[in-house]
Image (cartoon, rainbow, N blue to C red):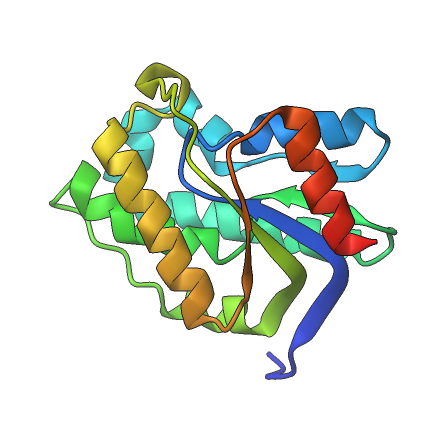
Length: 182
């Protein structure tokens, strides 16, 4: 595997903990005819949460493979938005002991690939006040905020300048994001 960095200048990540409005913004950007990639991990987790918690190594490998596939397919596109990126997997690994203390996953491969596959910009969405655990993979509000902090830590660790997107209307948040890329 090459140690060269690949920077997807036209690829923009929307990140943050569960309940920050990422999916809503991705849906809005998609309706505006932007290329989008929806979150993979949440849907896979919802299909079989116990399998995911009991076999996290397999879960993270599957998700990583899909993120890299999406990243590579985005190279052929103009502007594209991702509901989470490869570095988000590191924050997911960080939160795992809060969900199943018996399971540990080593993040060396994901960390290495997070350094190799880089994105143009990362937008950090502030948590929304109306958090609903059932809608967001059953993380408590406290776990969601811990995950959010892990996300910030991991992206900063990788040298990203996070662009904060405060709580606001969907239209205002989309405008803030688009103003940063035009």
